[in-house]
Amino acid sequence: MAAQDLSPRAARAYVTHLAKTVLRYEPKNVRRRGGGLTNFVYQVDIADQSLIARINADPKKLQTFKRDQQGMNLARDAGLPVPQVLDVGADPHPFMVLNNVRGAVGTHAYDRTATVRQMGELTARIHQIRTQGFGPTALDAAPLRGTRRHSWGAHLEGDLHASERLAALERLGMLLPANAETMRRTLAYMCTWRRNPVLHHGDMRLKNVIVDHEGKIVAVLDWENCTSSVPALWDLSIALHDLTIDEKQAFLQGYGYGPRELTKSIAYIRLLNTLNYAPVVEAMAERGEKSKLNWHRVRIAGDFNLYQ
Image (cartoon, rainbow, N blue to C red; front, side, top):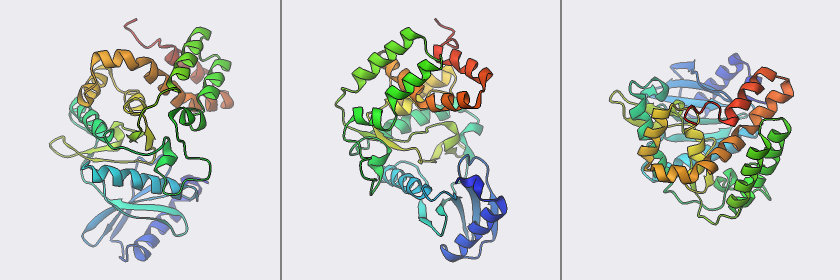
């Protein structure tokens, strides 16, 4: 069951119920906000406060909201700009209530390049936060039995299903044999790494930051995909994916990642990016979306890279 299994009318009624029972206020205004792909997102105005309520009908979402809260707590303790979480629970549906941070979503920032550079700076600060274990469950207060990963290699295979995903992509003709073999060798080498894990946001993109009227990022939102990983690579593989070349450079410069470091790590970033989008490709294949698959095939092959 997902957010969509609640009707908009039922979702709004539930948010009103939360305002009265959890926040102990009669809401002055409840209106749906855009941008929620997996959750219903509502702005709730009570007394002199403006809050955001995120809800979902899937009981499993409660654990995700708790992980979201944990990621923000770690970031807040490190002095990073994140919303304050007021409550997480299920009454009966999973919910999260947090402060509404005023400003513009990063996708509407008047200076995208400057915003992206700040995102790189903030990502570097996030990666200074040490964690224990690997993968998203490393941030859970009480992970399910057998899900805590004690090594980077166990995370790559146990959480990302790296070998399975590469095999599926090759079976679907998305990878040339030579490229698949290169990625398998890269994966085998990465599985041997012994590096200390750090916090990753997991979706550091323009849609997940809020900027003020001066263009300063005042909040990093949506920590649902936060995870514990080796420094830099996972967040970089996601953050750089949908940026222009100039924006990619600005992000890396903000992070403090130089050209030499990028050259050394590009094979790892490409592999993680491919693994991240493999489930999307498999879903397209299951739906028989041949045209979309053809376009993704040339993406993965690097045919959009005009410099080689």
